[in-house]
Structure formats: C-alpha cells, structure tokens
Length: 152
Image (tube, rainbow, N blue to C red; front, side, top):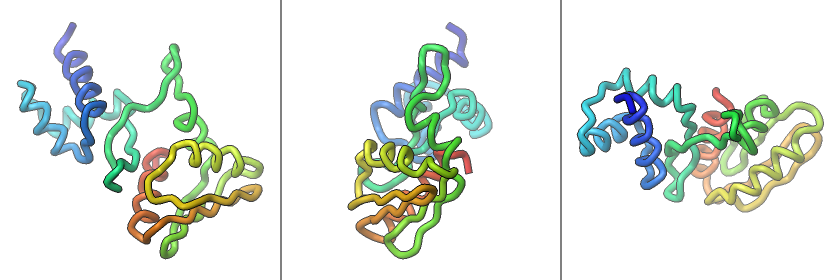
C-alpha cells in the first residue's frame, strides 16, 4: 500500500474511533501514529476522502466519512441533502430549512432519522422545515452541520 493510501486509511480509522473536529486535531493524532503531515496534505486528504462534518454528541462538528454505495456514490442523507436543501438558517432556537419544492418531507424524515442531539422536533411543509432545538447554541451547531453536509 502506498503512503497516501495508508495515511488516508489511518484518517478513516481515527475519525471512526474518536471525535475529531479540526484539521489541527487530525494532524496531532496522525503524528501520534507516526505520520508527519502538513495542513495542506490533510486538506487534500479530507477532500479526496470526501469527509463531511456532523454534529457530535457534545455539540461540536466532527469529521466523519460520508455514506457510500459499492460504486462510491453517496447514499442516504449524504446523497439527499446536497441536492434538496437550498438554505438553512436559525433564529434563537429554531432552524428553518428551505428545500426544493416537494422535498421537505424527505429531508425532514432524514433529519429525524439521524437522532441529532438537541433537536426536540421537526415540522415539514412542501419546501420548508422548522427544526426546534433545545438551545440557540444547538440551533447554530445544527445549521453549521447542515451547511457542511450540503457543501456551503
């Protein structure tokens, strides 16, 4: 196995075993495992591995591998959200997600299936979803995580 593939496999192992929220944290963990890497290398690895950020149990956005099928195509929420969600914002503890017409129900069901910490409930219309969060911080973290998932 070449050095790049070996390093990228180690990255996937690290993010599966513990929450890693920043490139600096990932660099430190890799160095602990004997990999001398730069920020530019990690940035390329994250892009090549198509890592996404998702809200972890502590409310921080952490890296995770996107769900993929046997052909490497995104599946589940990783396929749905980028194509269906137009925008997400929040006011106080409520997030508002705008979707393509007719897609709010599917996006809402996907969000419900994620069991995100800090979400009390969701309501979907045709192209709009309201997400009630416990706190303003949870709403901000949720908005940031969705924006990461949709590539904004």
